[in-house]
Image 1 (cartoon, one colour):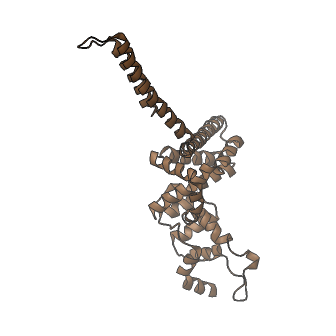
Image 2 (cartoon, rainbow, N blue to C red):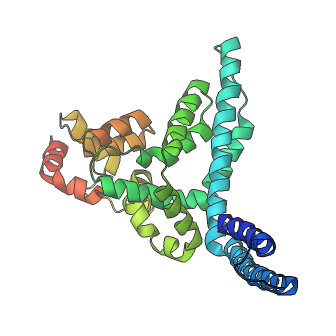
Image 3 (cartoon, rainbow, N blue to C red):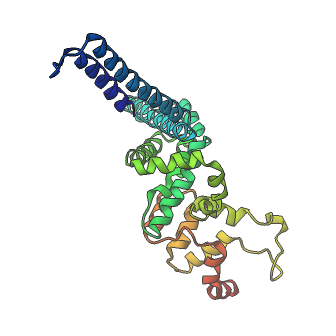
Length: 292
């Protein structure tokens, strides 16, 4: 729109000058030329004024502001990831055992995770996971990577996660940025759809499945003894020799093992499966194993 305003302004200047210098086939008075030039200039000035109002309205719109907020937060995140890589890389070159202080970068990462744009990324990652079904999708690990960077003291792990996150961000398309902007603009809808985010987020779903019910001390015992936990049951199945990427996926979450989680997802782990559905799949085997 600004481009068109500049073009119209230039045309207004050309037309106004042309009225005075272009020869006509009949004689005109200079006053007539001045009147025509003034009328044309006034008309284009009105058009330019209307365009200026439209530009002002666009800048003040929530859509424009949400786009700028997302772009600003992403620029800060990319700058944080880059500065951390530079600082840590220089320090590690000097001393491989160095414990580089990355507290400033970690604070910035935490601020991003707790920002409105960080909230929008939960929905974005869930959408990517949902579209990819059971196929590998690294966006499922986006928030885990950020959390690992915040909590780890291992500079090598920090750098690895920083590079992985940076690669994800640099591959964002214009359509992806529009999705994020729309999520920031329409927070009512984003909040209302957060249940879908949970269903497509391995970590959130696993935590809700394990800790979202009764408190451990309130669970009723069965068979005269304490009820085995969900993860104890999965470990029992794994020890019996059962190979199932869904079991590996939940155990990786419990162990906070990102690489194992990624491997389980790559092998076909279903991030949408519930803990009860997984236990029901092996109900007979669990009963037999517990009786041994």
